[in-house]
Image 1 (cartoon, chains in turn orange, brown):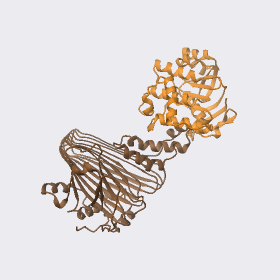
Image 2: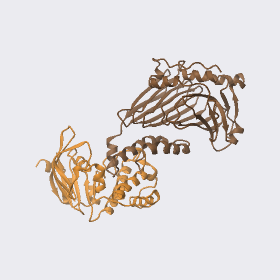
Image 3: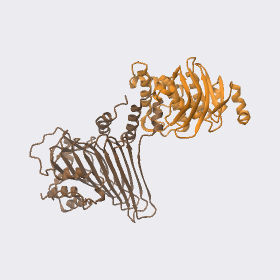
Image 4: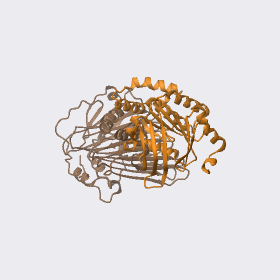
Length: 248
Length: 386
């Protein structure tokens, strides 16, 4: 599904951040990317999603065989890539439910299907909100504006549940969540998983991986994947930290 | 009526420095005589045109308010109409005041609103190269609570100019919500002067929805004369062609424990221009004042111009006064966020531009006018959100 080959990238007119990442993700798989602060985890997710502040200096990213780097962020989204933000932006004046309906209708339009009106969409929204045990007031609130950290993350997963992407990249979705919220969000993510979609989890902590079992765990350090393994690698990192890998 | 000749503001006059001089010159050449053709109108409410009352199609309100011309006023009432204290160089205000020194309209509001619907006042614009002037004074009795909609409406494509001087005396304990809706011809010019004098415990909420025409300029002065008076001013505008919009405000805290809040938000695109010039004055005795002012501009085109000049003049101790001003563009991170959800770039730009305004518009006290404004302004200017 996703093939990242020897990816080098930098902030435009800035220092290089990614220095040769290669990663292959197949449908049905869950990959976890862990690593110390500043290792390039969030940058990797933003580059896959198409953030304009970064420049890819070498390598390529293929999604279902197509070169992603030729596509704008919305084209990538419509092809089925979803990024859950570490820091979702707050947009006052934009109603959450209306925004979700616009996003959902963009997808339907791309697929050549009829767009839904507000009443039909409310039924879809109610079902997904129930999945995440979200209060109905979030329909009327402004997009992420004034939300707590946990509420923002839950709203990100709500968007994912509505858009049903082929590949979801969740950037530190567990940060800001209390224990109960983490379980609810993780259960929501697990319910959207199937053999046709894939998930990349970016996280610092094993606790998210207790709920969402990864098939592969990768350690990113100084812009490179320096070690890959199965779920047991995350347990070892939790126990021993990163020093034993980064110093090797 | 002995109207003073209309002259241009002095070139060095700070209050007019952001207004395009060619527009003022054009305006000074307009015909100041009242139009001779009869005007018919279907508008509800109290309809004014060039200082004259054309009709009043709100029966309950018509019976409840007392309307007099200035020449019919008692000396005490007449004194109230002299409250206007604009800059002495405000030639447009002087023109209106001299034109209507005896035939301005004085509205005595009732103690209680006679109907649930607000009092509608319509200032009608019509004519070619015609200078229309209106003078209105509204008196609010003690402990009264009122909602007035002031609707500036004009014939499409006509290039008249509407000059309007409005003064209000807010007696003790009164509360007024004044919703101003500017819906003039795109070729017209609108110059208003609002003067509010607030007594003890009185409240004013003045909310302005601006349209886009050649020139709109509001001069707003609020005098918080007695203790515990409160004013909340909001103005929004969305100019996407070549219109100009200027807010010139002076809030004078004269007594202790008064509160004022100002929020002005404007979107500019095309070659539009705008300015916000707001002063908060706190007199020596006005301790425990709380005054807040915020003006925000969103620029969508490199050819727009915005000028913001927030000012505080504080002569008292123990006050809370804040002012802020931002002039910026759409945030790239916000656009990216919306694009990652499948929205086209243009859709994202339109959604964020509308959101910038909606944050205020959704709290507008009269949602009938808010919806009308959405339809006439936002749906036309930022349509790509469906």
